[in-house]
Image 1: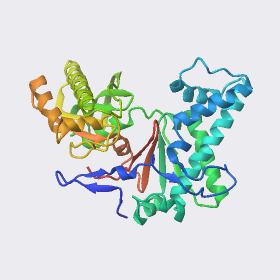
Image 2 (image 1 turned 135 degrees about the horizontal axis):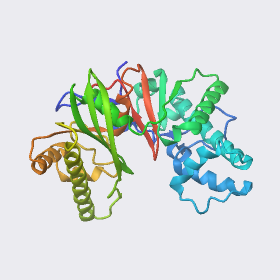
Image 3 (image 1 turned 90 degrees about the horizontal axis):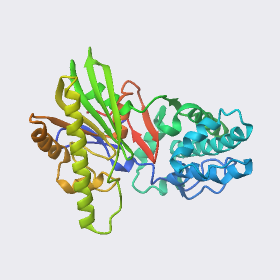
Image 4 (image 1 turned 45 degrees about the vertical axis):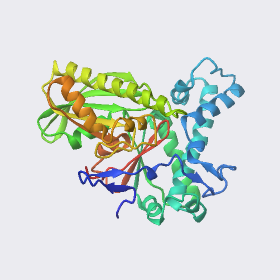
Length: 363
């Protein structure tokens, strides 16, 4: 089966994921089965399942259990939900069970929407043709990753997804969870894109943090990883009313990236004999060094030039006084590379939004 969400670059003949794969704009025009939750018809996937929606529900129902989350910031609450599922306090457990059941059911309904491809839902996604729906119908395995798919919460979501498919009488996807997935993108890049018997600097540039690591590869596999402290992502703001402000923010972001990569490379050189290849996972639908100019906080970097990888190579080579090669890879694709031996599968990252990656992509 040809994957309709993948294209081949005219520049280097590698495959890349196109933005139309995004689930964040998908709409459940018609709920695929009645009796799970009412009132969902016509809502976007991102409205139905997201950290923000989960946090809002936690805050809404916690007061009924005498639980006060008012002093806790939103970003910390999903972690509190996972802890509450195994709390000795019955109030916390009951609250967490209600939230986990509701959003596990919703995740099941979203996957069932993709699996069944009802005519109403096909009509609501005008940038997908029949081949896109057939791709989702024929997939065997869905690998759930990210903070919302970890530990007890992830297992609870998996249970609810299976129950929704069983209730609908539809053969479910094989749902896989993976614990400790923070550096899977880094590991995937190293496994597929490092030369053997080398050490390389590998970075994961997300919307929230820059993860940094030095990987060693020998015998055809990643044989060692040294993780460095993660650094905060900055200059991620969008959108801009003024193009001048957008360009200024692009320069700020670029200089921040340049400083992090160069200083990390120099730091790593003190303990490792690094290759000249720098691998970067980035939260952008990039291909062949070219950034997508539309989506996400990194999109504004496209204003810096036609090929952002080439720009980084040129300036880093000058800064480091050695010729380096920069490879940019879409972040969810980088994570999916870790599962390259998994046939007919898709990786879905449950984070700020839905991240999609296919393990069988050819780089």
